[in-house]
Length: 263
Figure 1 (tube, rainbow, N blue to C red):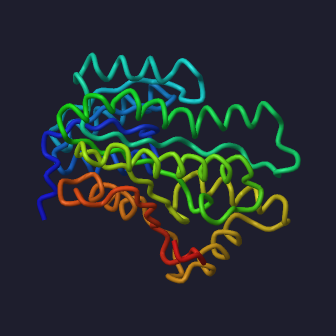
Figure 2 (figure 1 turned 45 degrees about the vertical axis):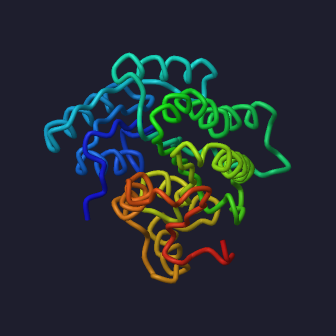
């Protein structure tokens, strides 16, 4: 199936590794031109060089920390300088540190608000006018199952993912008539370094090992395995494609059937 992504300009955030990198590679394989960002300039440069060579596409990049208030302006300016707008925006950030709801500090809430909520809302607003003018745009925000089923000890993530989901649904109705679709995608347990870090944290609290916790995690998923980053990225690419032009305001789970809720 031709997804109609060849030549489309895509900004993929937090894309030097993990889910973001998998999304960037999948879009590149479909012929999209990329702008990637993350905090590490060295990792970004390496990823950009490899993707450009492997898929023969243009890849620009900028090291930026989206937990900082000035980052959105800096990133948007750099993207517009290189590409004069984009067709696809993939909002994606690393998860905040684990905390209990009753013990989360004001600073931790503020960092999470900027990192997860404000970065996605402000980037969306930056690129919306051009998308509306060309009558085509895709805004996709990577969230988490915690948006619908809170996860223990992830108070900031639970709250902010739910908030950005509400924003996305609201925005989707405002811009649908302009050919712009706005969706969220919820990864379940996908095997990334973030998941290993969280399970290591759990193992240290429980007096077990990382291997024990990874096996226990897999057993609690109906498919009895963790997802692969490329499986998640394929779902993102479809939602970004011209084939998904009638899908907007959705909150799509990619979780191996792990969630207990209907939606």
